[in-house]
Amino acid sequence: MNPTRPGAGWIEVITGPMFSGKSEELIRLLRRAAIARQRVEVFKPALDDRYSEGDIVSHSQWRVPCRLVERAEEIRTRLDPRTEVVGIDEAQFFDDALPAVCGHLANLGKRVIVAGLDMDYRGVPFGPLPVLLAVAEEVHKIHAICTSCGAPAAYTQRLIESDERVVVGASGVYEARCRRCHEPEGAPPASEPWLFPPGDDSDQKEEG
Ligand SMILES: [Zn+2]
Figure 1: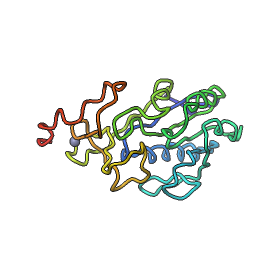
Figure 2: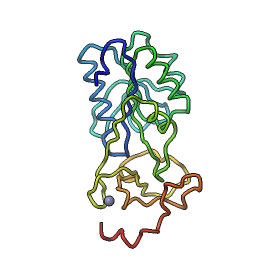
Figure 3: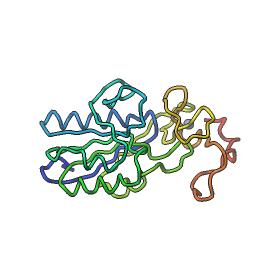
């Protein structure tokens, strides 16, 4: 794998639940490219205002300057043509145009590194991520640690009730859970048959 070969366009996706270190991994790859004097630009959706504007800030407080955009198409139109490496964080909040935008940039020879949640708190594939995972040359699916039992965790558990799909915030509102300990709220929609119904394994959860 050598995605930094000049002119070799490429899409890679870093995905997993909250608290799995997606932003840290994105920042690590971007810093490594910047140290090699490659031109790096970073974008994220304008709606995520958890921390300061204009930076990607990981939970461990590493930060990288970035541009806030409303729509995926703005990444294409606002990108400096000289940029070689494009970072995109919180990709799950972008619209469905994001995979096409990433494909366009990769076709121009740019390395596109995308980080985002693969599933929402119910375990439902999130926004443009399912398509991005399919079209990417490389996928890093990383895990957190289940807060309940210590197993590798691929799910995000929401700890408060809300009608919104997204509740902004992290600690105290969400925690990472494994498949056994994850408890999706409400009934799974019929269109998402891979979701196990909540409660049908409740007698086994005590063991974890
Ligand atoms: Zn667990």
